[in-house]
Length: 193
Figure (spheres, rainbow, N blue to C red):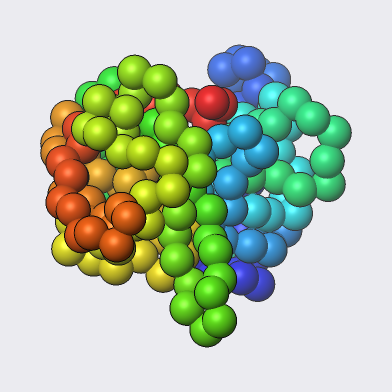
């Protein structure tokens, strides 16, 4: 999905066949978005209205291809969101009957020192996977499973797309020493904290 792609959000209100279908149209206005208070960065943003009437229904492009699953947000906003569909999302829905994504329980921010951007751990959820793995606030993330994240969104997406139950290798710098930590990827359901 690309910004500017034409999309249709469809649904079957309340699952009643004689109630009819609910369809709205719009465009993709942003990709790799996240909801406030969430660490899941794989949402598509659209101006096609998504309401309880088409929540959970398909978002399709102008070629009829499934690109997202409509996700209704209760807050009044002119922005609407869909879960970007990839093989991980489909497998999660088949296996768990809801969306589960990888989670490690830490918040990271981008810091700039001159032209150098670093990813610094700023919060760790007590008893979460990152806490259990030995992460500390002020650790600097260098790589995730051998890949260098370009920024916070990229790192969160790498974590979210990791297989639940797997272990990830994360290289960090702590007090000028390079350290490798292994963290268990746990399941996070829905989009709330």
